[in-house]
Image 1 (cartoon, rainbow, N blue to C red):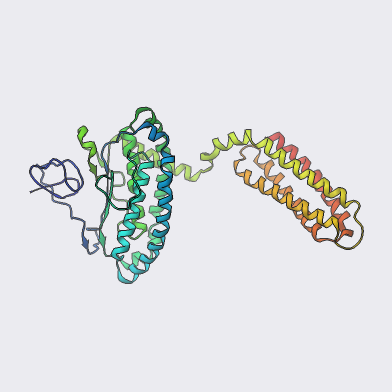
Image 2 (cartoon, helix red, strand yellow):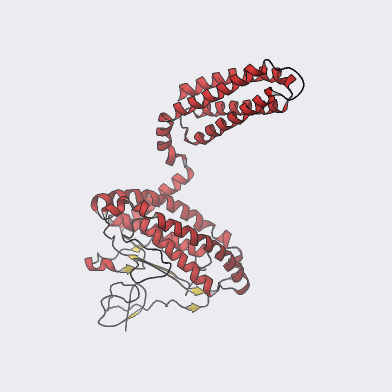
Length: 409
């Protein structure tokens, strides 16, 4: 009897493709079959604890108009994924307690979490240009899907379940780094697919390897498997080029050509670098916004603050008496508006690249003025001239700091 070299399923002598994974059948093979997906006990070497992810071995053709609007086409998929992900989080907590007591995730929870992870994999593959067909809204595995996911349902070590959050730290860190690099690869893939109608094979292989690792890491975190996701992290050596007809087959082997592996490593290094220096990712965008939007935004905010302070100081100069009157009300009104302007400054702060020190000093002075006005709002009318003097002094400081910001911007 022959066996599929990809998944280990038995094959007939007249089969051209495996009926389980779709991989081309090599009849002249002496390889032993891989263990089937089954209910079995967990073993130290991970036998019977596989996360089997299937994806086409060759980069599929992409419709250019679909590539152009891929993000918009993915919106309903994201909405549905968010809904089922909330349910999956609850199910994971229940599964954690169940596995801690029984040493196994209940069959129903295992099936539901696997279905959600499979759907997450399909959405990620569609957005990442790993598949060209819209995946639909079904959580179940379908024969027409271009993504497959099956996970062995096995017993779990209770100590591993108890400390799963700690054990998952390495895979979470690597997954975060890989995903950042994957975004960069996806941008290049998007441009290539828009021009060529197909993603170059090395880019496809590298992005698929990142995608596979993310799925396996999620399976480990969600208690679907006791196996860490680092097996075959750099993939297997690529086999000779497949025929064109083989593009329809789903391969469960993470193969990488030399170019694909090089791109994968570069993506990891880039992801690690940008994780350490996140400001470099937003710097070009922030610089453009800073140069174009910054000056009029800060000028409008400063003008509003100056008007508020002028209205208050003119009224505070004539305040007399000991009771609460119009001047404390004017101080409260000015304080509310200055607080609104300060929040606008704080929101824009993230986009300030050049002149950041001057901007922060100006923002801090606005905060001091707001606190002074807040105190004035609680003081009687007889104390308003004192607060008027404080506000005039702070207004003079604010004018100097504003000139520094204006020159820097």
